[in-house]
Length: 376
Ligand SMILES: [Zn+2]
Image (tube, rainbow, N blue to C red; front, side, top):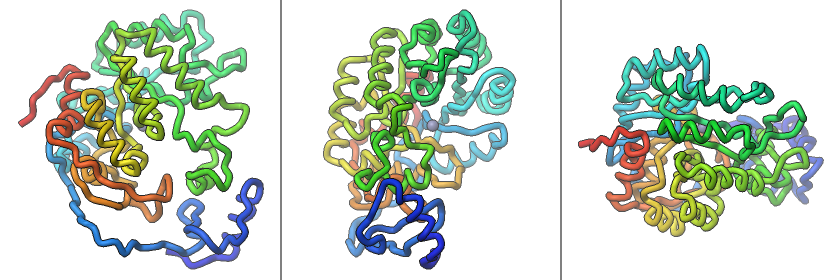
């Protein structure tokens, strides 16, 4: 850990000067820009708690939210999957065209039972006539080659524009035939829209992810050039309502981990809507009472996902996620990193019953992807 560096401190003050003034910048929490510790303050808890570290899940796991590219070695990933107890992974970064062909060849053909590949859409062609029909034809072809789902990145509704210069809304009618085709083919659509609520708020002293946004200013969607989070979620909900025969997965707890009551209403309303837990154990683990109730009530609709891949050494997540789901451990780190990557807090386990654990770990996704396997 670095010692206090006056130059970096001045840089930090400059970066923060436009929106944040602290009465005494030397008082407060550790301040980081990137990996630089600007102020060496790292409080260590004195609380004595139970620690159940879990390297392999209690039941087989299907990770429905991973990303890896052609630079990865399938054999190495399979080795890490075995070590972590992961039976199947869904790679959401299949792409389209030649890349998709290569990914399918390299991973799907190598171990068809272990790798599920989702394809993506080339939205740069949004202005072409019959865009929706062309993408629908692409989906059919991708499906016949082995792609088992469609992943939509959060740029839809947030930054993708058409030639009019306007942001393409998630419920744009040009996309209707795509959602319908995915339903017809039985391909789940994992649709990431919006982001944590704090990313839509000003980067000021009230923002609970201030440090994170200072490290990654491009993750902020505050300002008039961006639609509000509410409006993006409403557009997504319109799609859920219009395409009841298509199964949608909302990653990151449907982008509503901060408001499980709102999410519960959506799950009650739209039976074609599922959520994955990737990247939101920090949010869920800081509200363990409500999170536990939520998991038990919606045990058939929640899927395990990490937004990592087995073997990834940068900020690995599996053992932390297992600990959160399986144990009643209290006040522990939601990260393996020199500092809290999202918010400055700790989390609590929700000790799910075995029946619920099995559903979240693999039974729900086995149904969705039509494998239907009962693992031993
Ligand atoms: Zn992701």
